[in-house]
Amino acid sequence: MPRSVNSVASRNRRKKILKQAKGYFGRRKNVYTVAKNAVEKAMTYAYRDRKNNKRNFRSLWIQRINAGARLHGMSYSQFMGKVKANNIELNRKVLADLAMNNPEAFKAIVEKVK
Image 1: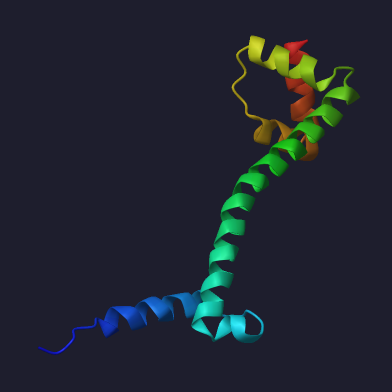
Image 2: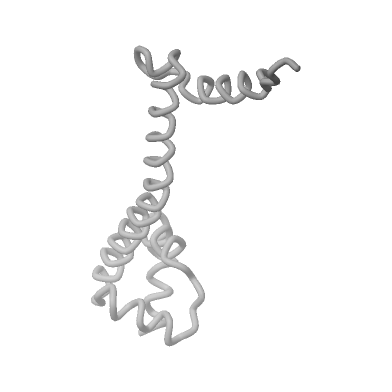
């Protein structure tokens, strides 16, 4: 009985990796074994940096809220404590956007929590 190899699936698997490696430099884009390693590494970085991106944005929002709160004589921690105490359910992303792009609305929130 002849040996059975699933060449259709094998080819598709290799094509999928090479398609993901499109745009890479040198052999990383067209040699399967090299491309496989490059794509695997890239996926690892992508997974890690999706988490880091969330951290970076949260940090940015905190800086913006802090700057906005200090214009009205409060620190970030005092402001956020009072926001939570007054049951204002705005997250940091929204508060940072208000502080940056709509200072009068942010001022109204600060006045409400004082």
